[in-house]
Image 1 (cartoon, protein in one colour):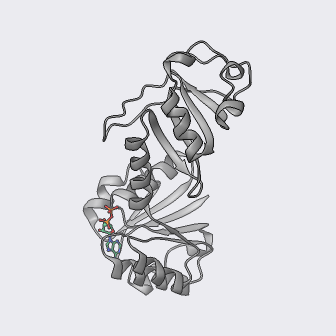
Image 2 (cartoon, rainbow, N blue to C red):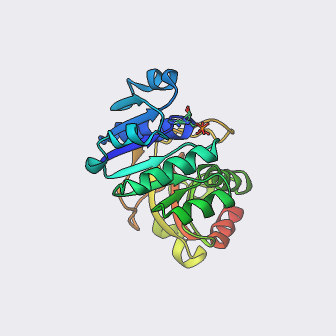
Length: 228
Ligand code: ADP
């Protein structure tokens, strides 16, 4: 896939780096030459330009690009201007970053295809991590259902998925386990997953240090965590 990411702040730059690492062709754009220099090794292509300049933006390979992401956050005015400009230029798919509700309403009115809220999404994940003891990471599907990564409770070590009866006792589905995972749940620290297994089977043996990837209702996930 081909991406253009506008604004190499912390969100835009890490998104561009990750998409590049996954084998996509990414053009990272920033008005600040220092940002462009800082990321030129990590992003497929980097260009220094002012994305509010229609003439310059028109010169980008927009027709060959699958997704354009406006990742400018702090300056909402610039974000809105750049989003409107790209909408006018009829890019295939336009994703914009919103920092608050009013900003989101404006982006919706412009007609962007999708809106991302990195601050809100990461706050939700952190809230879960802090409130649910043992939760390493989480992904909210909606207000009720989530996929969470939870440290294997000690009492389930050396038991199989079938023994624990996740479905019957907790109404939860084990999607997989992450083996040999090195996890540090302190704020700010990241985790390194060494070995991801395929889809969990009833006979899968749960071992010390495993991370369970569970799917279910938030209430049931909480019940499981509290019972541990
Ligand atoms: P974060 O919160 O993810 O760090 P910021 O909103 O602070 O994001 O960063 C936005 C980035 O967008 C900055 O690197 C800034 O230089 C860049 N930027 C701001 N205005 C423009 C523009 N007109 N054209 C291109 N890049 C811009």
